[in-house]
Image 1: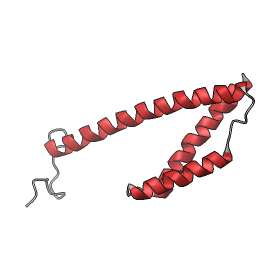
Image 2: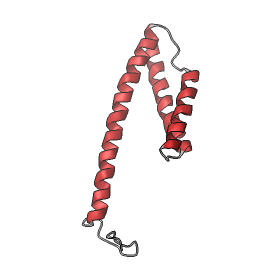
Image 3: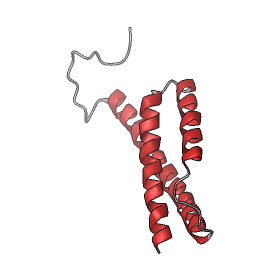
Image 4: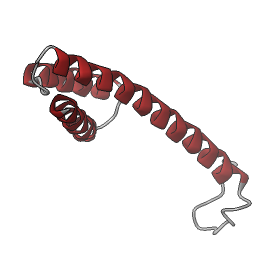
Length: 106
């Protein structure tokens, strides 16, 4: 018999210790994701400034393709939907390219 409340019960989500524990873990993971994204964008901003300085194009389709393939494989290993991972990475790449284009325009 499990200690987890049954789904048929409607526990008060404010006082349910199990739910509160799950949510605390989710909140911690969300905070880590935000900090990791912030660090990633700090680095890609420096890349964009460098590319602008040495007149390299903002986008690198070959690298993007390799990254997507690599992260799809990592996703499969981690039992995460590779389609979701690719969409997420594509969103990040598109934002990075936008930043690189802005750096080039300065």
